[in-house]
Image (cartoon, helix red, strand yellow):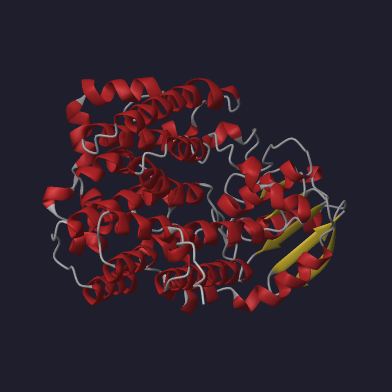
Length: 474
């Protein structure tokens, strides 16, 4: 009997059928589900905010309806914020059915799927299966992943797996995929152009990927100049809004960059502070177990991120709760992989890597918020849910920053926050307030003051008055 000849399986096909691929897929799926459920529960408990979930939800809705993409509580075209044109693609699912949960799902998937290129970078570097799986777990257990997922929605999360994939593509000399990744990264936020630019230096000088390095330098530098000098200033009258965080260095991007070199004393005094030291500890302590002094070259790419956060006067740029440290994570993982591949790092075993990552997660991830902070408004939860059902579609609405993300599928919704005490109520069809839990940038006295005005205004009548929740309609 003649034997049937079998064609050899391709390497990719063999890997897809392996136990490692099944474990990796399971880790990604489980992480996606956990992240999505956590952000959805937070949203359902009225702890998501107008900035930024309501902002991007209204933007996606407006884009899907072919309406001008002007965020009503910001007042300008969204490209004047951070030139995040990737939102044109993010809004596509809203054409099927408009729902804020699309954003939460996209964010969960983007954060979790970064595990895939992380694993392949580890395997490419020569790590064993066990170590590669452990590094993947370390990525998923990094507290920044969990915390950022809870903080509303930010298109920068889409850049996280793209940065890791671009590094993998550069090392495989896949120029087309590398360029595509960079273009998409640049569309996620203007500041990421600096990360791309710095990555170009690293690829050129240390990875010896001259072509990829040159491409990253040109694309990163070119987009930074175009976005900050032409695109963004075309919309808000004040130009690049982030400049205000560095006003002690200048009033424009060019002036700030110039003073970084002309005023070293001012820069050094801003850098060497206790909050900055605490921030650096937050960045490096969760991964200190895997870093080696001989393999810190990838961290060249995080220099712009660190400088922006260290020099900023905005306190939220100096923690692991917000999106500002996101660009650092891919290169921290690459630095750990390089150290382990050379037999360096304090911890090298699969179990040790997992345990150290788990300790970092338990210490810095904000899962405890579900036991206290996110439950503090349960006394008005039912009343708020009931009031929302009475709000008419497309009505012009004034509400709190915590309620807004539930009602941003309309062209006009504004926030009852500091500075709106004397707002013209005549521009609204409905006003929904919560005196007990006024939300971000508001106070019970501000909300009560608006309620008192509405009760005296003959144009409005109360529709809901329950547990400190008020809905007035015209």
